[in-house]
Image (cartoon, helix red, strand yellow):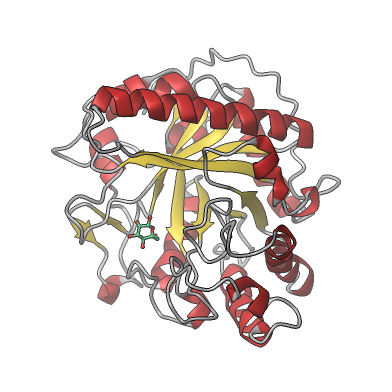
Length: 378
Ligand code: BMA
């Protein structure tokens, strides 16, 4: 929103922003340190940026059709339609890119994702990528946890190691294509191998050893950075919530390949649980999770984020101001990203849209909650 920024939070920002350009970091150059410094400045100003997954490429009732992927002006957005401004952060999903598909698992052409990413950064925004890759061992999707050999099979020496190199090659090509009008690479955030302590993805806690997971993350980041020389990527490590600090760190890939510590946490009522009860439980667990990440981010000199959150269909009319905001306002998080508004699933939405605004406008009017224009004033 266009509110005047009232930084009311005084954070002791122990963040050394190790982002590229500083000592031990993921990328090591000026391209990334610009983004890392900007994010640190935003936190220091008491701002929490709002992010939304796939915001510019589809919403609850619309999507950019594949036919106009090369020409659409990318001005549509459910968040903009409700709040009059774009999210400061936009997330995009890269699942399917590893297989050489034209469009993602959510049917968004990668050429459209590339254009929307460059355009959002041109407008002053921040872009982050999630990845739900197919199971390399079974051929199933990211949620296929039927084998505990998937991760080991693609690591160096594994039977599908070549396949993984091919996957990484496609990712290298994609990140290398993220260039502005002058041909310069744009800085972005990549958040691979997420929610890795739980066991709902094939790279999850019970599906591979800690050593294998760490190799997986490191091979990914080091391929892009060292072998491809891509110095425009900040890496985010984002386990699921409801875990201890020991569990969080048990699979930590290392300070040299991680720039941002995140956590994913959703509200999801249990059978028979009231809306109030579910909100209170979500808030308590989120508090525990953010307390933990804050401590770790401080001791490792990293930025922190609530990398994914939301309440599907947002049944609570006051969710944004009475459940989410009272918790996140207490933490120096760079951004909070709510998940996608699927255009082809009636109830699969996590952000407002016209006719279903809830209290989102009040939320983005709260002190320190930032949309794109707020970020541009930093
Ligand atoms: C999940 C759901 C799926 C989607 C996946 C990747 O949480 O939204 O429908 O395919 O994320 O975006």
